[in-house]
Every structure is written in structure tokens, then in C-alpha cells.
Image 1 (cartoon, one colour):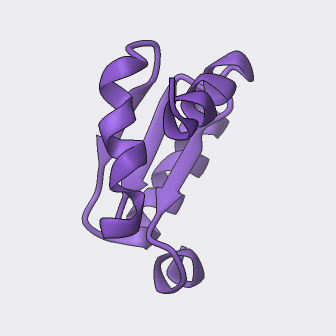
Image 2: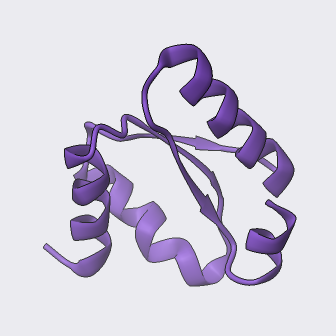
Length: 79
């Protein structure tokens, strides 16, 4: 297990089932680790605002926590 997989497993242990993503190249290790954690479903979006809005809407409607994976720096600021 590497650090990326450990982080995703920690999200699963916290009750997260869905990870909304708009990753950049620096986050590709986390995207690759999604294969090793089948309990976590990744959803790819094309804009950080969509990722943030989808995670918020999912959490409100499902009553479960959601997580986002945004590109470092600008992606986090847009989100």
C-alpha cells in the first residue's frame, strides 16, 4: 500500500463512498489508487465548480459525506 491508497482508504473509513474529481498531473497517483479501493467511486468532472457543487449536493441529498479531489493551487481556489 502506498500513501495515495492509504489516503483513499482513510476516506472510506470515514464513510466517504464518492470522490468527485478534477485532477491535474500532481494528483494522478490518487487517481491511480482508485483502482485499488473499489469501495470508493470516482466521478470525473471538467471544472472545479462542478466538482464542489456536485459534492455539496450529493452530501445534502444522500446525507453522507463526499470528498473532492481538485488540482493543486488554482483548482482549489476555483472550488
